[in-house]
Image 1 (cartoon, rainbow, N blue to C red):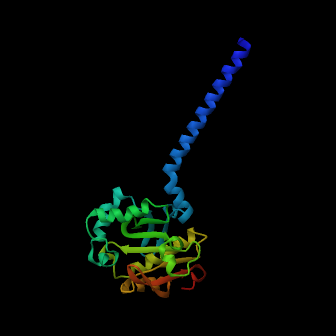
Image 2 (cartoon, rainbow, N blue to C red):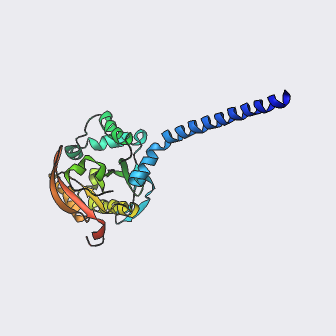
Image 3 (tube, rainbow, N blue to C red):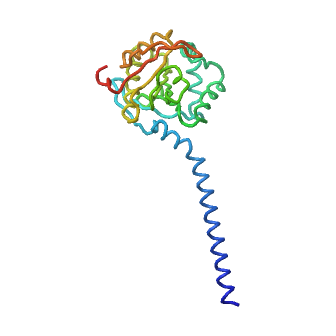
Length: 232
């Protein structure tokens, strides 16, 4: 009896241990998946802008840093309430308005990533890097796989009107093309009424492809081609 019962007990123990290990692995996998999903989505869809590093511009060292609402919400709310910004972004109001705008991106699948633009370490602009080919925008133009869109606002009024937008738009478009090998075009759709913005895009190597009617505005569809990167 002992010789027959002992193996049965051992087998039961082994089975229990195996089940416990599998249960632990499954639980750990679920925890990791839940924790890493935003990062994995970002890496898959936009090749991790957080890791693009800095670039040297005539205005100083510039880099993008993904927004952290707990740290950045007050700053961004102030920018959104600047009349020049609010005229086109339409996010003036309490912090809850800006927070809701950020949340739609941060709770998404990583196809749009809100970022601060830091010049020599100082936050001075807000950017949205997004997959234009996966965005509703793609219904309004002949999108190509991995088209990458950008939205921009210069937060501090003292930095506007002196060509800084042109410098930064070129820098960010270069960051996109340097770090997203699958992307052949950088896309933007500024409001056609926003003459300084349209001018900045044109001066930074974008071409105006056409005008398009979007639900919230009539926009100039701006495109910077990888193939023409060094010519414009």
